[in-house]
Image (cartoon, rainbow, N blue to C red; front, side, top):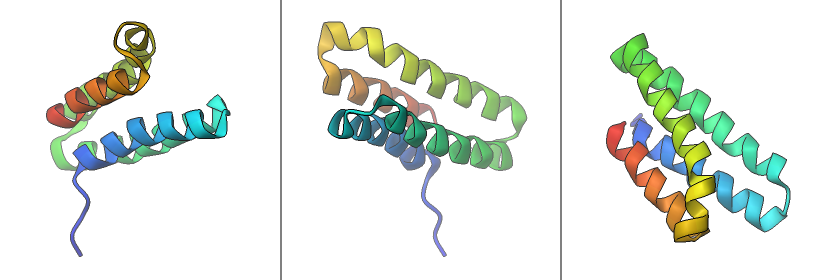
Length: 92
């Protein structure tokens, strides 16, 4: 069985989290999606590349999630989310 690339898992978490929060108007529901995807990606990063790489990529993932919020004021919400997602996907 083919596995989903970790870049896709991370991207799904960030984009999906924003989408859920926006369309349900419930930020806490939107937070569940990136948390679950981030945990899954971190576990895979650790198994595939080791703890140090997993820690770095997890830090980048969390920073992207947090950084997308102030960036949205400058770029717009979707553009911000897609920009930080591209960075995390490329790194992973």
